[in-house]
Length: 256
Image (cartoon, rainbow, N blue to C red; front, top):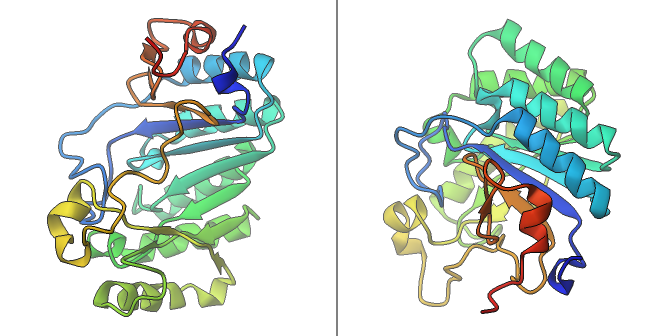
């Protein structure tokens, strides 16, 4: 029914929107200028159910852009993931989607209710150049109050250990969260693409990996990844036009 290239498929990912509240100079996607819209929640949840009928999905992730600009979509996706018994339900957010404390607290409650059980909060020197820390800190406080498992997920330049002004600023920002007892995860190492190549080129050399470390091997697909417009990454299909199972059945890598 499905090509062997999909035998290890166990993950679903949604880029919910490319709209973003930040203008980060390390962003691999560029400036996010005039990015609008989001994936349709009904189409997304239908795809989740159908994939789970055929594959043992262990994890699901929502991210962006800033996904919490469209919180209702996030709730729907994660409720469906919980309904389909997907164990790991991750959300990556920069934590800045509103300045209203009432709204921030409400979103944290709904995220807990919808089943998010791994909240990755992007805080570092790059995000905080354009994103105020105060509402992000309050969101973190609310997430802790709602008992959502949360960790800080910073972007590091060159390496986690490198002594450069950006990393030093990131360490200072992380220290501001110590009173909440939130662990700091591995985060990620910035790779030269989009804004990072444009604004941080001096930190990269010919040995720096230029391709995204998150891309799958086309002969060993482990994640089905959806774009906001419904495109299925690497599979030459769109779930607004074609049933996801038909897209998966027709996938044969880069074979002619």
